[in-house]
Length: 274
Image 1 (spheres, helix red, strand yellow):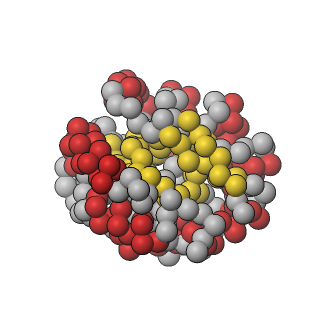
Image 2: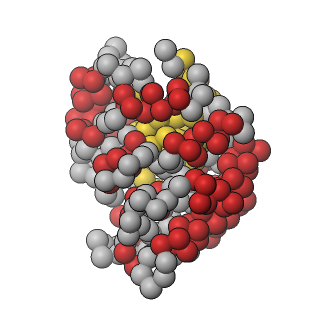
C-alpha cells in the first residue's frame, strides 16, 4: 500500500467532464484503503465554447453536489473521510464571480487552477497552432502569475504545468531549467501568499514522463521553503483514483518533503511521510 492515504483531487458526474457516480468513487477509495478523499468538482466561469460543447458544462450545480456528498459522507463515515472541495478555474476576468462563489459554500478545500489561458484551453490544439511550443508554454505560465496577482481565495495551485500535458511534444522538451525565469516568480508569489502546491499524478495518464508539476519544480518549491503540498490523482473515473501514488510518495520524499497536507475547513493538516 502507498504511504499516501489521501487523494485530494477527483471528479464525479457533478463535473462537466466526468460521468462517474460519486458513490462508485467512494467505494473505490475504500477498496484502496484510503483514509481521506476530497471531491474537487470543476467550476469554470466563462469557459469558452469548444468542439466538445458549450462552456456552460463547467458551471457547477453546487447545491446538488453538496446534497449528494452529505448523504454519502454520512453513509460511509465509519469507513472513509469524505471532504467537500472545488476546483476553481481562474481567469482575471472572473475574479468577482470566483470570489462570490468561494464564499457561498463552506468548502473544505479549494484548488485554484488555470484551464483557460487568454481565452483558450491548452487541452485543444488551437492553443498551440501557428507558433512554437515554447511560446505557448510561456504564455501559460505568465497567465498563472496574472491570476495569482488578482485572486487569492484558494488553498493550493493545481497541476501547475497543466499546459505540458497537451503540448505537441508534451514534456519531451520541457524542463524546469528551461522555464525557471517564469516559474520561479509563480512559486515565490505562492509562498508570499501562503498558498500551497499540488502534486498531480494525472500527468502520467497523458503519456508524460513526470507528474504535474515536474519533479524539479517540486524540488525548487521545497528549496524556497514551501511545505504546503497536497496529492491528487485528478481522477475522473474510479479506476484512476490514487493512481501512481506509490511513485508520488517517493518523489515527495526525494524532493525533501517530510509531510503532505489534507485541508479540512480550509485548514491544512500535516500527515507525515513515513
